[in-house]
Image (cartoon, rainbow, N blue to C red):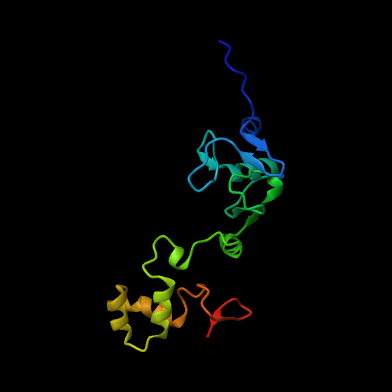
Length: 164
């Protein structure tokens, strides 16, 4: 019984790639809501850019595969580099691809409210009640461990931390 000829993982992978004029290899098969492509292997579904890195650059480890081009469905191995989760998050933040402050989907406060909280001389428990947050959250806002990068009229130190 002759079936379809078995093609290699690389050939199957490349059948879902469109080489763009920009140099990106655009993943044309299934992409998730966040824009990252998925590729089915016999073992599991894998992120397409991770599969590309593995196929063209060798074995992966636990590190993230980062996009130098910032195109989430790009699978060009020349546009991919390994980095720690921290490096990947710093890269995303530096390139403006992360939501924080009032733009974060789970934020309870606006930038204006945070500014009011930081400037308030009231007791933290009273501020917490007024804004519907915990006293610990108020403390974190006042000492700068939360919402430190919202871009108010603050100075920026060399480390990138904000100060008054």
